[in-house]
Amino acid sequence: MNYKNHVTRLSQYKSVLQRLVKSGIEKTYAESISKHIGIPATQIRKDFSLFGIRGNKRGGYNVLELLEELKINLGLNRDLPFILIGYGNLGKALARYHGFHEGCVRIIAAFDPKVGVLSSIPPIPVYPPASISAFLKDNPVKHAVLAVPDDVAQSMFDELYAEGIRGFINFSTIALNVPEDAYVNNVDLELELETVIYYTKESNNKTK
Amino acid sequence: MNYKNHVTRLSQYKSVLQRLVKSGIEKTYAESISKHIGIPATQIRKDFSLFGIRGNKRGGYNVLELLEELKINLGLNRDLPFILIGYGNLGKALARYHGFHEGCVRIIAAFDPKVGVLSSIPPIPVYPPASISAFLKDNPVKHAVLAVPDDVAQSMFDELYAEGIRGFINFSTIALNVPEDAYVNNVDLELELETVIYYTKESNNKTK
DNA sequence: AGATTGTCGTGATTATTGTCACATAATTAT
DNA sequence: ATAATTATGTGACAATAATCACGACAATCT
Ligand SMILES: NC(=O)c1ccc[n+]([C@@H]2O[C@H](COP(=O)([O-])OP(=O)(O)OC[C@H]3O[C@@H](n4cnc5c(N)ncnc54)[C@H](O)[C@@H]3O)[C@@H](O)[C@H]2O)c1
Ligand SMILES: NC(=O)c1ccc[n+]([C@@H]2O[C@H](COP(=O)([O-])OP(=O)(O)OC[C@H]3O[C@@H](n4cnc5c(N)ncnc54)[C@H](O)[C@@H]3O)[C@@H](O)[C@H]2O)c1
Image 1: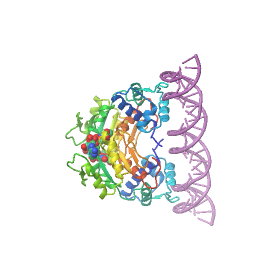
Image 2: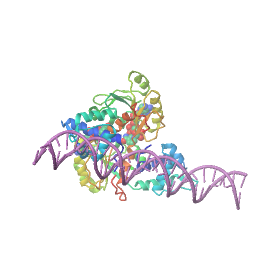
Image 3: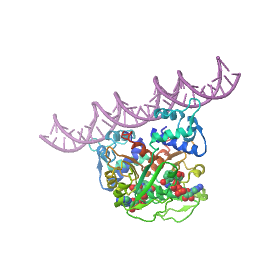
Image 4: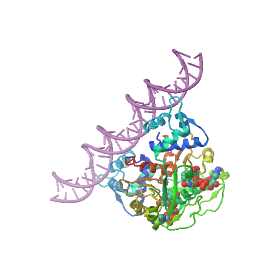
């Protein structure tokens, strides 16, 4: 069984904890977190141990404290805005997603040559790409969502990198050429659909 | 360095090969695939070896043959349609994405209580959820995209499972309760953005 | 023909990741 | 008080995955 890696697991724990906070629950246990997300309790404890997060012997974990520790370890305890490059199909979907407001992710502006209507609530302004540089002078953003067509993904990456952006999520299907000190999380949705096909082939009955 | 797992790597190879086919290139080498996607050539050969894909000693790989073998191993050599549940922000983005037509993934119908305009080209019909059962009687689909709000994700999953769907991609942020013989690929976009934040914390300068 | 080159294929090795077993501590029960 | 119970925390172990080292082999060169 494969739960991706310890960072994505931390983020999953955080997500569960946020839900517990919302429903007013104050205390939880590795075993009960396990029930929610299907990751073995021992793995959860091991992860916590690795990140120096400790609970109370016998008493489980205080939900608020644990959530705070998770956020600190994930780097989500500060304000970390994103800019969105490409306000097309995917870009709009992300910009309009309400769930981000509850979490820590915030998209503060979008850039697209087609400057059109902006119907998200709260509204996210859409500017022409030429104004990226000026915008970043006033707003010290370090993270960007790349939702542009494949053929401009590399050039937009290069421009953003030159402007000081170092963290990227890239939805285009090409592999970007990335300097050592930048981080790109490639999310290829077509690939995600295809792996579903693979794992449901008759011949592949292994779990995950 | 971590390239996720061998299945996602196969899918990446496939994607590169498709691009090579389009540009009319007939022959390629592990080393040149490596240049495209940054996966070491030895890893690529190891993967091919694992899946029983063989090239020509000294001569590299025939692009068309290799692509065909990759498709067979991924289960993409047949027609494997998806239905889309939830035609909201994300659902629309997926339905309108042109790239799927070039690959093997096909969304043939969407279901949403708000049956409205359908502006994708080629058009994907949008039906009310009540007609899912009837639709599946006529169309033996085995794969679904779940892009519904969190609070109905489990009930829609259960319904689809009861109708025989076994492969899912789930965009909702809750972990579904899934029987042994179904496969769910959870894609949590908020988590994907958050990991970017983690990996760009000053304290985390490890690559990936 | 024989030497040389470039690339593949894979067993052996190393690194990473997950699981298990159990010592430890807090709480409750007797 | 003492024992029993129930979680946590972590080192030891096992499984999985990535890298390396090298042999095989076809093509090209002399
Ligand atoms: N939509 C999906 O479901 C989906 C699925 C898989 C992959 N992708 C990938 O995601 C990326 C975006 O897909 P999409 O469907 O949103 O495409 P899209 O064409 O709908 O949107 C792209 C947007 O980028 C804008 N753009 C073009 N050049 C730009 C520039 N220099 N700066 C800023 N914006 C620019 C365009 O005007 C457009 O609005 C593509 O690379 C695509 O391959 C999308
Ligand atoms: N949009 C994003 O960027 C984003 C990001 C992260 C996570 N998500 C998750 O993805 C899911 C979809 O997000 P979204 O932004 O597209 O939401 P959305 O509200 O825009 O779309 C959901 C759609 O599902 C439809 N729906 C409701 N009940 C249904 C049912 N029983 N059967 C079929 N359809 C039904 C609604 O009418 C709506 O059109 C949510 O779970 C959300 O948490 C979305």
